[in-house]
Image 1 (cartoon, rainbow, N blue to C red):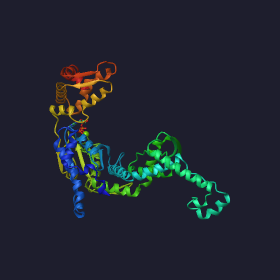
Image 2: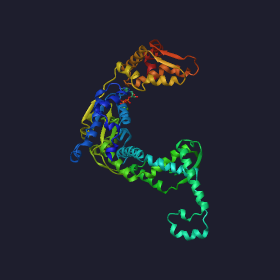
Image 3: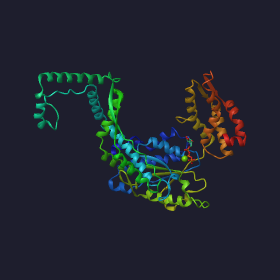
Length: 476
Ligand SMILES: Nc1ncnc2c1ncn2[C@@H]1O[C@H](COP(=O)(O)OP(=O)(O)OP(=O)(O)O)[C@@H](O)[C@H]1O
Ligand SMILES: [Mg+2]
């Protein structure tokens, strides 16, 4: 089962993973390498023999680096890339067990949900052909309801004993008349099937009955209710009656709906759930962002109690424990954890010693330079300049950035970061917005087909703001 789940990324070599990440993130090679190796190690572990596999636990990673240099971005892209169950959580979201808020264990439940999605999608793929076949059968029945034979009451009574189960009428009991009807019907069915296959009936309408349940959303914020919430939700799902609604839809829409319904019927829920648990346990990755925010500082005492508490709650999960979820018990021993934090005001050594020990691989992300900014503005798929170009394109405007303009923008961003707070690549967002504010507003009204942004254009719009400290505090 698991072997079939080893999707795309699990097959990617570290070099290929880095190459994928390179498409979106500039620099930060150490961090990219570490996560790539960690992901590959999961793949390797799956391939060693059973006894050894139990021994190999993942080497968790701690990414340390200033704000806005790509920590979260690496996680986000890795998630999109990885075929393994992957979730990203903020450490600040949790509170100590017993306090108001979300408890740390819920991250494991989230991971299993994620795995469930992956397994379900894969299984759906497996039953797809059969689901489509069944859906098409049902479509034919909808377009041409089966013939109902008028059988004399007396005969029906006689037959009822033998035929009670099948409910079918066999050919031997049909009169000639009815046989003719039956034959004609089956010919018509064939015709309709052919037409369906040729896609000639797509716009016909049929009526389908959909069943929905209106389940109340349960929003409790009681301590320790996290696990119970989902149980309650499930209970409500069972007891609320389904409401049936009949809708007229086209054949095309009906097919999509029926395929969905039929594949649900074909899927084995228990099998999927246990596969999901297994997948999460062996290949799951949990990315804990903002880990530095749960360091208790010396000064502020009030909030610290609970921060220490979160660390304490986190520890067993990272060390390996068993968590109860809706889908069964989940062992966290082999889940990979990647933590990230800016550690501005604190150090990794301010974390609880046990927790530090569970993140043996440390990677530092580098501060971004002006050259990095130039590359970030232009190189990645979906870089800022490409985004604005696409937006302006919808207004019929060709937006062109001259290299000297990009250079100037990067220069302003870098200078502003040096002079004021260093917010990394995030500075580019505010600067670009400022640069194109006017054009964004005027775009529909101007007749120009082409707007060229050069160094002069940039200077005219940014220079004043950048030089004026007060103004740049607000705008950049
Ligand atoms: N090296 C980079 N290459 C490309 N884009 C980057 C890079 N670093 C940052 N960015 C962009 O800057 C924005 C902020 O980056 P990100 O969210 O990764 O910061 P972070 O390192 O997690 O900071 P924080 O510590 O504040 O959470 C993102 O939208 C990202 O696209
Ligand atoms: Mg971040």
